[in-house]
Amino acid sequence: MRIRTIATGLTVAVSLAISGCSGSTPAGSASPLGKPSGQPKPGAPASSTPLSASALTGRLLAEADLGQDYTRKPEKTARHDDTTVIGCPALEQLGGDAAGGSLDFPNKATATFLYSGSTGSEISEELYSDTAPKLTAGTKRIFEVMTGCPVYQLVIGSKPVKIATQKLAAPALGDEAWSQLLTFTAGGQESVVKQTAVRTGAILLVVSGSPALVDSQVEKALAKASTGS
Image (cartoon, rainbow, N blue to C red; front, side, top):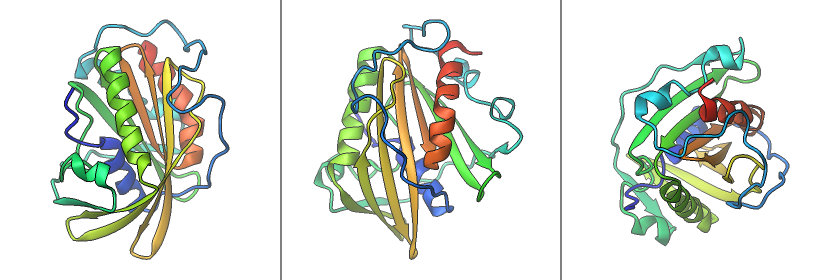
């Protein structure tokens, strides 16, 4: 599979950070980064056959799943600002669009929610579907590239953003899982975003946002993504 971008998740994370999403560094969890968790998946077994984008949309979390403190954020028209990577050769080698596009999987669905329970934090969910080997290879490479440079700079349009990355222990969920912490500095303000990816069968779940929100909602998101209910 040709990976033409780093991840929608990084774009989402930048957006969340710039809009002020922040949180404390979470405690590590049970299984090593990118290793099979060995834990049973919630609900019925996940499909081993790739799902369509419309099918994935029906498996996204909804406001009713999250509770009254969450509000669905309207989808914005996609922007294509020029993106330049400074200080991370591996990321630069993937091209100028590497940090601003989407995972190169054929089917996807996304949703972002505002959380009013604390300081207006946000949490974003992305679902992708492809064969299990392609999901594993693509996600592993992306996380390795993103965490391979402890500190680098992203210039989106004319806005410079300093990014510091840290590998985290992945949660014991699904068939495989990855997790990282990203600290963004832009305009003199610092924000922290956690990003956790879980593969179950032919579905890849990526949850990004405030570390506390990601930790509290990732299992619920996985259960619905796996079973559709």
